[in-house]
Image (tube, rainbow, N blue to C red; front, top):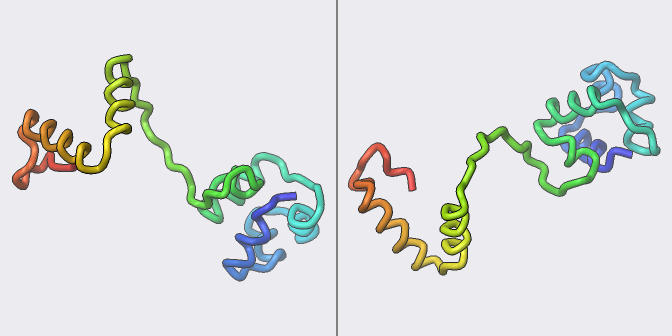
Length: 118
């Protein structure tokens, strides 16, 4: 059973028949996906996720995060950079602001600069 499929469909006021037409399955299949332990193939899951702009994980109930997770380039950190991130996360809000100001000062970021994204 696809835990959140019915919820997504009902929130958007789409009938089982209409959703079936969109993804290319029968209305009976949609009913089985929503109400019984019948699971669609991966391509159908992808079509549901794309149509509802969410993730497969959300549709099957593996996460409660409804928004689609976008692609991001992986950032590789060396051990020193990992330590800096770990230490930064231990700071309170004001301490973090101070660190950001120091970094901006060293990089000459701020004062309306186009690089002022922090």
